[in-house]
Amino acid sequence: MSDKIGLYTGTFDPVTTGHIDVIKRAAKLVDKLYVGLFYNKEKTTLFSKELREKMLVNALAEFDNIIVITSSNTLTVDVAKKIGASVLIRGIRNSEDLNYEMGLEFFNHHLSSTIETVYLLSKPSLQSISSSRVRELLHFKQDISQFVPNSVVEELERISENNKTI
Image (spheres, rainbow, N blue to C red):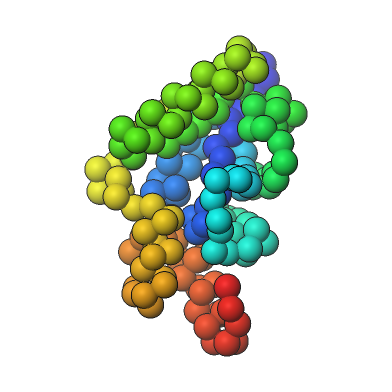
């Protein structure tokens, strides 16, 4: 019997506690979960791809069945085929997310009818957390520690201590 492989993708700019919750729950549904740090042409990122990947890898270090991958110029469904994923995992916070994800699922299913999309609803306590809001709080030098994993806070502290820019 082959392993059930899932793929959960995002920009993770930065990874949030909402992302981590979906990833933890998704990891229980599959034997192996790839978490894909993907490029989204509609988003301008604050953090470099390398920094986002570092924060994501550190945030997920405790999991045996999670592998972080990156992709910048490939459709999600094509990456899923390449890694043997049969399930795309998507997190839904609200009706806007659902409408957006339904459009993606239509085309993903058209491109590969053998790959299913599974939607995980955000826990009510995490529904308002988004990378966009976290970046806004960062801009105004507010504490983000309750909205992001420790790996993000630690990396930002390291950057601040070294007087580096993001």
